[in-house]
Each structure stands twice: as structure tokens, then as C-alpha cells.
Image 1 (tube, helix red, strand yellow):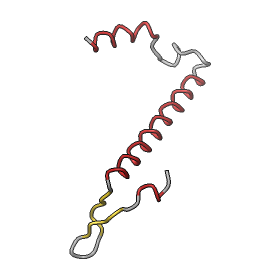
Image 2 (cartoon, rainbow, N blue to C red; image 1 turned 90 degrees about the vertical axis):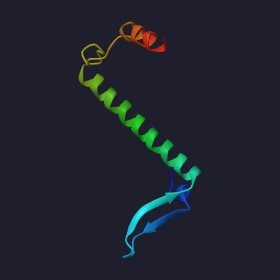
Image 3 (cartoon, one colour; image 1 turned 30 degrees about the vertical axis):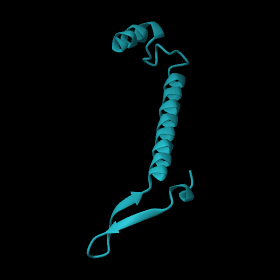
Image 4 (tube, rainbow, N blue to C red; image 1 turned 180 degrees about the horizontal axis):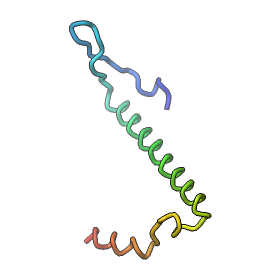
Length: 79
């Protein structure tokens, strides 16, 4: 994402001229939200891969659950 993607941006100022808030149009907000989500997801993935590497590539040693262990939980949540 580039700074141009979130333009136009408006600032609200107080009586002293200090910035107190930012106003974005809806599309800019959507782009910013998507970018934050993507960055967060990448961080989670990289951290997870580091955990796996530190556990010698063994998911159970990294504390990961098997699909069989989580499948039942997800099936219960969908009901």
C-alpha cells in the first residue's frame, strides 16, 4: 500500500491547531484495513514457521494440534 492509496485524508484540529483526529473516505479505510489484516496474517505465518523450525520441523513438538483434534471442535461450533 502506498500513501497515495489513502488520500484524500483530512485532519480535525482543536482550538490550538493541534491534530486530534483523522478522517478517511470509505475506500481508503477499506484499503487500510485490508493492508493491516495482510500484515498481521503474514506475521502470524512467519511466527508459526519459526516455531515449527525451532521444534525441528515436528508440529507436535511445536505444540500444534492435529487436524483430527480441531475438526471436532469446529464441527461443534458450526452446529
